[in-house]
Length: 228
Ligand SMILES: C[S@@+](CC[C@H](N)C(=O)[O-])C[C@H]1O[C@@H](n2cnc3c(N)ncnc32)[C@H](O)[C@@H]1O
Image (cartoon, rainbow, N blue to C red; front, side):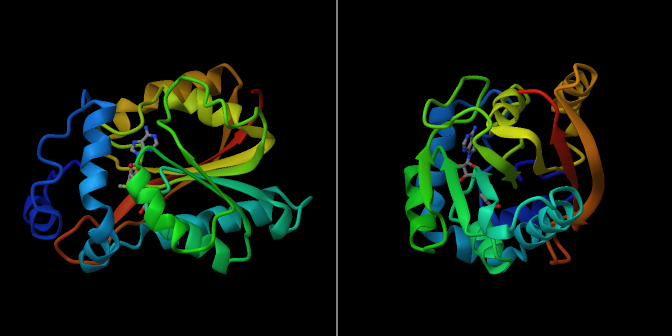
């Protein structure tokens, strides 16, 4: 979400200067501050901007689960939402019938907003990186979803290792990456594929915003865990 290329006016119109100082070396503290200050108006701002990714990505995961994980009912599927923010994805997943949901986010204020949605069973305040998050067991989840968090200054590519660890073998990871940020993630994605840690199930363009002054789409990915 932080890259403005081609859509400077739209980003400034809806988000002001929030992303101006975000770079690939932005610290965890700076990210915490950004979302602490944004939490109470985040949903309203995103709605004004025409943000639709949260719906599209949940739909993508739902379709992929139907095709790839027929062994469990929706209620039994444990799903972890990484960079859950205010819980927009949780609401969608819940409406789709998934009720065993966990939210992870570095911002306590964003998680407090997510709590109000009454859809997650568990909340974990942690920064996703290559470090193990002690509250999350290996193979604990059937699927992971991550929207708008694999972006400049947020979760780095090294976080894929921890994302794989917490999903069971055969489970799915579904996430979005803007094409102008893909360069920062692609090498690690390919390395993990080469090492047979995960395999790509599918990738496709999915809707990001439906406003004319914002980028229309983003790359969605679904991977299956092979080894954690
Ligand atoms: C752009 S918001 C996306 C929120 C939500 N997924 C959505 O689509 O509305 C990014 C969220 O990721 C969180 N975040 C950023 N980097 C993170 C990291 N490395 N680990 C955990 N949360 C992170 C932020 O606090 C923020 O709530």
